[in-house]
Length: 303
Image (cartoon, rainbow, N blue to C red; front, side, top):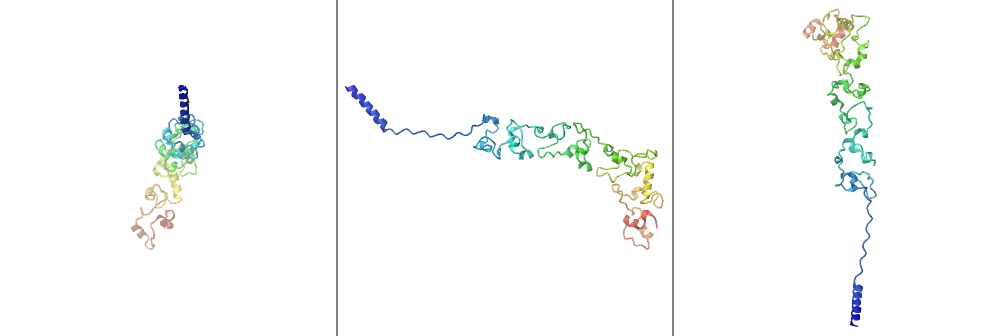
């Protein structure tokens, strides 16, 4: 009897404790999971471990956000973004087709059509495709670009089909043969096949011409063959007589004091001021310039 009372009492105590205990709290509902990272975040090869995902992505998905990539150190990829490359949007290279190419030809078509050997970076920079610094490169060749040569287009000389630009001749005649042979050129450079006494001028054009311009030529008249010198004297007589008259036998340098400007002449190199006043006792000499002298003494004639 006593045992049954003990069991009943134990059950009553347990029931009372259960009724008095507070109800168990319901666990909170977890927030929706963020979009899963593509397999895996390791797809970036550890390059973005220190960068917050929001620099490139939005909660809407893992696609690149507009203006994404800000703050990412591209130097860590081994392809630093410089010049024009830094202005391009990420998607222009990263098009979801694996790792983009890191060589120039991977993105830029070859305008040289495989005629130029060597890497693009030997001539081009990331600043601009046209920034080739051609003058500095040409100074290291056997044909430095000076004067007019420095402003003409490359293809004016480099027109051959080889894969190298080094086969272009550097002698003047190779490009200026038409000027050399032009019969209107004075003096006649190519000679006269019908007259063996009229010899050709040397084809070393640099003796007389400069890259600043084909004209005026700067030359020493004593270098001319005698036959050409005679014809040149006849041409000179048409504007200023040298074969006859008081100026016969005059040295070129006595009038032409500037070899680079052969049309600029002077008279007072020989005709001193005292001599001029004695020769013009009744005339007022208002100028000693050659133009004033020739106005009264055309072709150098005495009056």
